[in-house]
Image (cartoon, rainbow, N blue to C red; front, side, top):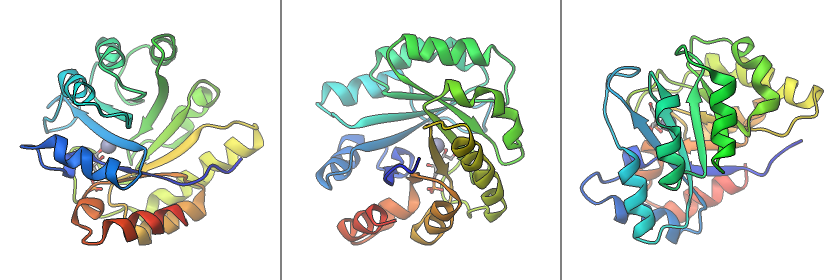
Length: 219
Ligand code: DX5
Ligand code: ZN
């Protein structure tokens, strides 16, 4: 099945001294999703937000769909805190060693959607057995940790493989891309089967954001 395209601006590229203003920018455009990157300084060499950030944004009234990307060595220890803080979708990486199946099931039992994430060096086959157990597969198109890196077009065959399995098996998970996504690279990803587009730098740097959002809606 083909999902309508979704643009998920990444809070990482917003104003860290005024996150509410960045969230308002997204909501005022009529967009529904907000991508929130959570880093632990261990799985990736950077630090960002925690559950309290989500709680505070909810307290300020945000109704956006919180697409929460956990870049953590031990994500299973934190899924409950993020679900309770208001994460609508919690995505965990396949690379660290923990109970992936149990953690994805736990995320759903907490009332959130569950996603699985692959780093650039991780082949599609690493998540093949989990595809029926997830709401979203996130293909990293940069090495995670920092915004503003160039898009890796060598990830396109991985997207195409995942999209092919989705079709063959009559599954409906969303296929998301994250890293170096702008209008041009998003078009390549869309052609390969992606339907959900994280945009940090390209979104927050866009001078005409309504036009930017409208172009994504047409993908
Ligand atoms: C990187 C994060 C991304 C980041 C993307 O580790 O997972 O979500 O915000 O930033 P851009 O769009 O600038 O590549
Ligand atoms: Zn991300």
